[in-house]
Length: 261
Image (cartoon, rainbow, N blue to C red; front, side, top):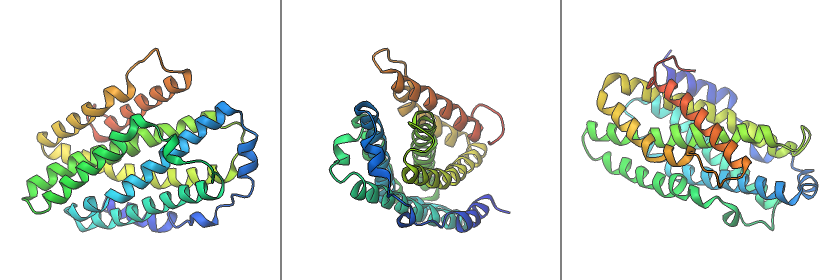
């Protein structure tokens, strides 16, 4: 079966969950029990995920419209639906659990470019390329998929989930938030699988597309994973996880050899 069509089928079977069904009854009490340091770190994580989900939900439509095959557009229709649901979950969480917290005040400002400004720019380029020739559309799509599925979801989000796995205060803490993150992570696993398959196929077809993938990674990865002695241990650990995710994405695409994971 076509890989994108298979993922579309999995999205229909496994992606139908409703953010309003997640029980948030004990969440406020769990926040109150956190230390100030742990509360600030987790709040920053939630705010950054919220801003990232909102940003990609706002900008994904041109990817869907520009995809050359129906099966790819079918899958991306499920991804757009899921990105909106992810945004809905975080909006509900801040509204009901953290009503006094302004997400904008806790968003990691160093992510503004890659998560918001630059993804809006590449979305606009894909939209403009739809009026151009097929080669120009594919060039814009390859850059966009690398940025979106490779860096935002494949690196920033996946490293964020792994970091959360290591830093939850206890296995029982924040059951509603943990369920929301688990549901979103499962959705995004399909998104990343689609994006890496798309890039692997295109890089195998044409060396030019491989160059665009490499150039897009080179634009962001050194800053994201570079060593810095000034960072606290938690931030250093996050960069280590980002580096590991980057290596996995390169293997998925076939840039360094190996099979898709």
